[in-house]
Image (cartoon, rainbow, N blue to C red; front, side, top):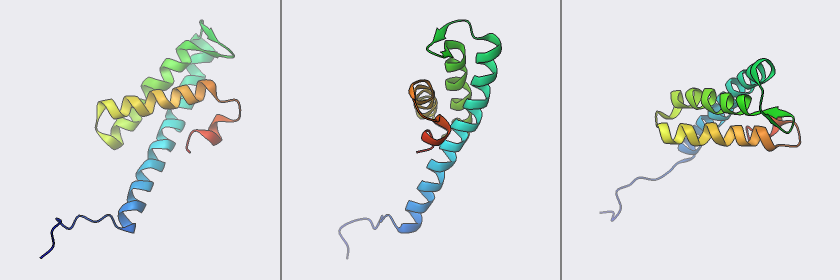
Length: 101
């Protein structure tokens, strides 16, 4: 008889987790980047470098809502949303390449 409960992580589990993480990255980027660009260009008043605070907050809020579909956990969705918004704000290279990774 085994001493442990038999909960091994298999390769299929790892691929499933990878697929969810990639889907979350794509959701954060596609929803957040498009909405923050639109809001930042038309409504952005407070500048942070070459971006706006309004665009940053829109990215965080909208991408958090998109992530909430996948994780169904408010705290984790906010972490992903604000994490993506911070990366969007401070990346020097093309953020569309950097954020999914």
